[in-house]
Length: 204
Image (cartoon, rainbow, N blue to C red):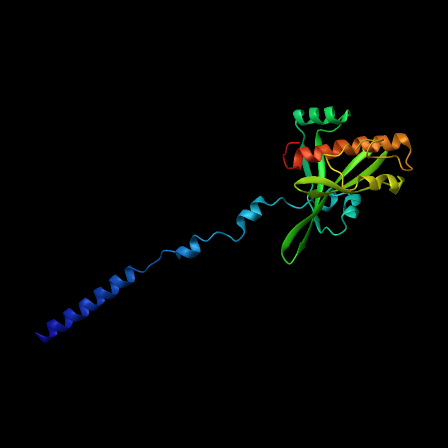
Protein backbone atom coordinates (compact mmCIF):
# COMPACT_ATOMS: atom_id res chain seq x y z
CA UNK A 1 0.00 0.00 0.00
CA UNK A 2 2.83 2.38 0.91
CA UNK A 3 4.58 1.51 -2.35
CA UNK A 4 1.47 2.36 -4.39
CA UNK A 5 1.07 5.74 -2.69
CA UNK A 6 4.75 6.60 -3.28
CA UNK A 7 4.53 5.78 -7.01
CA UNK A 8 1.35 7.85 -7.32
CA UNK A 9 3.02 10.90 -5.74
CA UNK A 10 6.04 10.68 -8.08
CA UNK A 11 3.79 10.32 -11.13
CA UNK A 12 1.74 13.38 -10.13
CA UNK A 13 4.91 15.42 -9.63
CA UNK A 14 6.24 14.52 -13.08
CA UNK A 15 2.93 15.45 -14.71
CA UNK A 16 2.96 18.78 -12.90
CA UNK A 17 6.46 19.60 -14.18
CA UNK A 18 5.53 18.65 -17.75
CA UNK A 19 2.47 20.92 -17.70
CA UNK A 20 4.36 23.87 -16.30
CA UNK A 21 7.14 23.45 -18.88
CA UNK A 22 4.68 23.37 -21.77
CA UNK A 23 2.93 26.56 -20.74
CA UNK A 24 5.99 28.85 -20.86
CA UNK A 25 4.97 32.38 -22.00
CA UNK A 26 6.66 32.98 -25.36
CA UNK A 27 4.72 36.13 -26.34
CA UNK A 28 6.90 39.22 -26.85
CA UNK A 29 6.92 42.13 -24.44
CA UNK A 30 3.93 44.20 -25.55
CA UNK A 31 5.49 47.53 -24.65
CA UNK A 32 8.65 46.72 -26.61
CA UNK A 33 6.88 45.23 -29.63
CA UNK A 34 4.50 48.18 -30.05
CA UNK A 35 7.04 50.95 -29.40
CA UNK A 36 7.59 53.15 -32.47
CA UNK A 37 11.08 54.37 -33.32
CA UNK A 38 11.84 57.73 -31.77
CA UNK A 39 11.21 60.71 -34.05
CA UNK A 40 10.04 58.44 -36.86
CA UNK A 41 7.48 60.97 -38.12
CA UNK A 42 9.96 63.82 -38.04
CA UNK A 43 12.55 61.74 -39.84
CA UNK A 44 10.14 60.77 -42.61
CA UNK A 45 8.78 64.28 -43.12
CA UNK A 46 12.03 66.24 -42.89
CA UNK A 47 13.44 67.39 -46.21
CA UNK A 48 16.93 65.99 -46.73
CA UNK A 49 19.74 68.53 -46.75
CA UNK A 50 21.14 69.43 -50.14
CA UNK A 51 24.33 67.78 -51.31
CA UNK A 52 27.38 70.00 -51.22
CA UNK A 53 27.57 70.26 -55.01
CA UNK A 54 23.90 71.30 -55.20
CA UNK A 55 24.50 74.52 -53.28
CA UNK A 56 26.43 77.23 -55.17
CA UNK A 57 29.34 78.84 -53.35
CA UNK A 58 27.65 82.23 -53.71
CA UNK A 59 24.65 80.92 -51.77
CA UNK A 60 26.82 79.61 -48.94
CA UNK A 61 28.65 82.94 -48.78
CA UNK A 62 25.34 84.82 -48.55
CA UNK A 63 24.37 82.93 -45.37
CA UNK A 64 27.71 82.18 -43.68
CA UNK A 65 26.03 81.16 -40.42
CA UNK A 66 24.07 78.34 -42.06
CA UNK A 67 25.35 74.84 -41.38
CA UNK A 68 23.05 73.11 -43.87
CA UNK A 69 20.98 74.08 -46.90
CA UNK A 70 17.97 72.58 -48.63
CA UNK A 71 17.70 72.89 -52.40
CA UNK A 72 14.07 73.77 -53.13
CA UNK A 73 12.67 73.38 -56.64
CA UNK A 74 9.05 74.44 -57.06
CA UNK A 75 7.09 75.03 -60.21
CA UNK A 76 4.97 78.12 -60.63
CA UNK A 77 1.50 77.40 -61.92
CA UNK A 78 0.27 78.99 -65.13
CA UNK A 79 -2.11 81.13 -63.06
CA UNK A 80 0.73 82.33 -60.82
CA UNK A 81 2.89 83.19 -63.83
CA UNK A 82 0.05 85.10 -65.46
CA UNK A 83 -0.52 87.08 -62.26
CA UNK A 84 3.18 87.89 -61.83
CA UNK A 85 3.57 88.99 -65.44
CA UNK A 86 0.46 91.14 -65.18
CA UNK A 87 1.71 92.84 -62.00
CA UNK A 88 5.25 93.42 -63.25
CA UNK A 89 4.86 93.83 -66.97
CA UNK A 90 7.83 91.49 -67.25
CA UNK A 91 8.33 87.93 -68.41
CA UNK A 92 8.80 84.91 -66.14
CA UNK A 93 11.56 83.07 -67.97
CA UNK A 94 11.65 79.94 -65.80
CA UNK A 95 8.65 78.04 -64.47
CA UNK A 96 10.87 76.01 -62.13
CA UNK A 97 11.87 78.34 -59.29
CA UNK A 98 14.96 77.54 -57.21
CA UNK A 99 15.65 78.68 -53.67
CA UNK A 100 18.04 77.61 -50.92
CA UNK A 101 16.82 77.81 -47.30
CA UNK A 102 19.75 77.82 -44.87
CA UNK A 103 19.62 76.31 -41.38
CA UNK A 104 21.61 76.38 -38.17
CA UNK A 105 21.33 73.82 -35.37
CA UNK A 106 22.13 74.86 -31.81
CA UNK A 107 21.56 72.56 -28.83
CA UNK A 108 19.45 70.26 -30.97
CA UNK A 109 17.17 73.04 -32.21
CA UNK A 110 17.10 73.64 -35.97
CA UNK A 111 16.45 77.23 -37.01
CA UNK A 112 16.06 78.68 -40.50
CA UNK A 113 18.34 81.67 -40.95
CA UNK A 114 16.93 82.74 -44.29
CA UNK A 115 16.54 81.70 -47.89
CA UNK A 116 18.66 82.58 -50.91
CA UNK A 117 17.79 82.86 -54.59
CA UNK A 118 19.97 83.59 -57.61
CA UNK A 119 18.61 86.03 -60.18
CA UNK A 120 20.24 86.66 -63.56
CA UNK A 121 19.93 90.19 -64.93
CA UNK A 122 22.04 92.56 -67.03
CA UNK A 123 24.63 89.81 -67.48
CA UNK A 124 25.14 89.60 -63.72
CA UNK A 125 24.37 87.11 -60.97
CA UNK A 126 22.21 88.74 -58.32
CA UNK A 127 22.12 87.05 -54.91
CA UNK A 128 18.88 87.78 -53.05
CA UNK A 129 18.72 86.91 -49.36
CA UNK A 130 15.23 86.62 -47.87
CA UNK A 131 13.94 86.55 -44.33
CA UNK A 132 10.45 85.85 -43.01
CA UNK A 133 8.36 88.90 -42.19
CA UNK A 134 4.88 88.18 -40.86
CA UNK A 135 4.61 85.04 -42.96
CA UNK A 136 5.91 86.54 -46.20
CA UNK A 137 9.37 86.58 -47.78
CA UNK A 138 11.08 89.93 -47.31
CA UNK A 139 14.42 90.96 -48.79
CA UNK A 140 17.18 91.10 -46.20
CA UNK A 141 19.92 92.07 -48.62
CA UNK A 142 21.03 91.83 -52.23
CA UNK A 143 24.55 91.18 -53.45
CA UNK A 144 26.02 91.60 -56.93
CA UNK A 145 29.55 92.18 -58.12
CA UNK A 146 30.20 95.46 -59.89
CA UNK A 147 26.93 97.05 -58.79
CA UNK A 148 26.99 100.10 -56.46
CA UNK A 149 26.03 99.33 -52.87
CA UNK A 150 23.94 102.50 -52.80
CA UNK A 151 21.66 100.95 -55.39
CA UNK A 152 21.51 97.44 -53.90
CA UNK A 153 20.89 98.61 -50.33
CA UNK A 154 17.53 100.11 -51.31
CA UNK A 155 16.00 96.64 -51.67
CA UNK A 156 16.52 95.70 -48.01
CA UNK A 157 13.25 95.32 -46.13
CA UNK A 158 11.10 95.28 -49.26
CA UNK A 159 8.59 92.60 -50.18
CA UNK A 160 5.67 91.87 -52.47
CA UNK A 161 3.62 94.80 -51.12
CA UNK A 162 6.25 97.33 -52.25
CA UNK A 163 6.34 98.90 -55.70
CA UNK A 164 9.91 97.82 -56.51
CA UNK A 165 9.92 100.14 -59.50
CA UNK A 166 12.89 102.09 -60.79
CA UNK A 167 12.10 105.77 -60.48
CA UNK A 168 9.57 105.17 -57.70
CA UNK A 169 10.85 103.45 -54.55
CA UNK A 170 14.10 102.39 -56.24
CA UNK A 171 16.63 104.89 -57.63
CA UNK A 172 19.66 104.22 -59.82
CA UNK A 173 22.00 105.59 -57.12
CA UNK A 174 25.18 105.25 -59.15
CA UNK A 175 24.16 102.25 -61.23
CA UNK A 176 23.71 102.59 -64.98
CA UNK A 177 20.06 103.12 -65.82
CA UNK A 178 19.74 100.04 -68.02
CA UNK A 179 21.47 97.85 -65.42
CA UNK A 180 19.38 99.30 -62.60
CA UNK A 181 16.15 98.69 -64.51
CA UNK A 182 17.06 95.13 -65.49
CA UNK A 183 17.99 94.21 -61.91
CA UNK A 184 14.94 95.92 -60.41
CA UNK A 185 12.56 94.17 -62.80
CA UNK A 186 14.18 90.77 -62.23
CA UNK A 187 14.16 91.14 -58.45
CA UNK A 188 10.52 92.20 -58.49
CA UNK A 189 9.58 89.06 -60.42
CA UNK A 190 11.59 86.96 -57.95
CA UNK A 191 9.91 88.59 -54.95
CA UNK A 192 6.45 87.88 -56.34
CA UNK A 193 7.49 84.32 -57.21
CA UNK A 194 8.69 83.73 -53.65
CA UNK A 195 5.46 85.15 -52.28
CA UNK A 196 3.35 82.98 -54.59
CA UNK A 197 5.23 79.82 -53.63
CA UNK A 198 6.02 80.34 -49.95
CA UNK A 199 4.19 83.41 -48.67
CA UNK A 200 1.21 83.47 -46.40
CA UNK A 201 -2.03 84.04 -48.30
CA UNK A 202 -3.68 87.33 -47.48
CA UNK A 203 -5.82 89.99 -49.10
CA UNK A 204 -4.93 93.64 -49.62
